[in-house]
Image 1 (cartoon, rainbow, N blue to C red):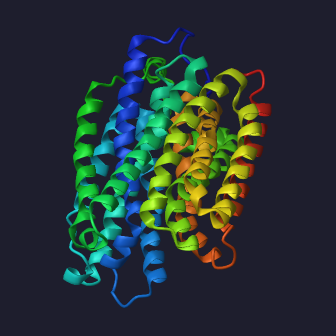
Image 2: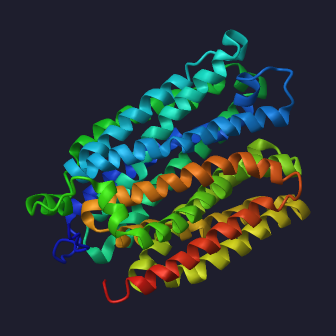
Image 3: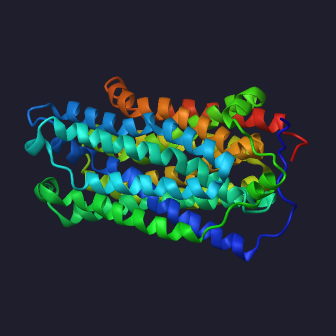
Length: 429
């Protein structure tokens, strides 16, 4: 089957597009909050869901392992939802992923701890995390495809950056809630009951997202290929048969976003607290500043990608991110009072992640686009995102700069892949 890369006819950005982008971005923010709030309470969860006589580092390692389990099960949800999304429509799967996220998030807030259920407690926590992973596996690729197929081609960078800003705002919301909890309650109160509040709040957020997404419409691109009977009967088979080079490129750029989100935005507050013995409330507060920087960085680099192309943006943005991250991990050790500004600048530079969906959307033709992005993005997250939260704490025993070394390797790989993509697609767009 001949798979076309074409989009609907060029047109200006319309009012309905703005409404779609706003609803999708807000919904993405609320759902991503549900997924990431877990990491901000790893220290408390490690104490509550594992034996009290377990060494602190081992409890934290096992809690990060449960956090990583969400990534390991992302491909399952992503591949299944993408298959049906390419066959029957983007909107249905875009809404289903929310419902699958809301329930386990709420349940985590209601789970009994180790003191009540012994080893049954961490097993239930693991099960809820697996369900979250299945849900988020379809959410992020589906969201990128959904918004990109609603806007003119020359605004794909803007659309994806707005959506990614929404996802980043979910991290910001998690950081704000975590900071509020840590400042409003004593450590004893947090361990006793206050840790539950963010997860219960997340369940309520999930219900709100389900309601919001009923107002969205199917994408014009899917309606076009459906009308022309160009939908794929076996999207995964067609993907592998005709897009192998694009799969490799997309896996490499997916490693870039994996490292940036997992290490820079999610793990760094806990890692800096552990390495330099900083109060957790202080590192989370700095993470809030970094996430605000990320939101601005994503928008800026997304719009620059529309104008100059993702390869040129990566050529400048990746070196800036690497330099800023080394400055953070080295500078905080010398001047702890520099934590907030250094982390904020690093967050701004992490906006380079905006190139990732642009590269993948341009790589895959519409009939297999959802499947292509979902397979590459989720398999990369399953491997790199699943192993990273376990490996990084161990590597820190060797060098405190291990997180920076890892992110440098991942982002350089993504930059190289973006250069190859620009060469392959030259003249196509």
